[in-house]
Length: 64
Image (cartoon, rainbow, N blue to C red):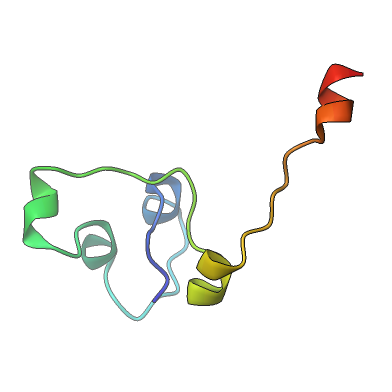
């Protein structure tokens, strides 16, 4: 539900999830040999996936 977990999240001092850090880092067996770490985690689960919100500066701000 809270996946993907970033490397910073899995290695942080606090862990409040009902599953282990190992399960969070390697939810599938093949990931042990082919692990990739996402730069960010999910926001609002599927709702956040379907309703993206850009936080980038506007073109005017970048060129001004």
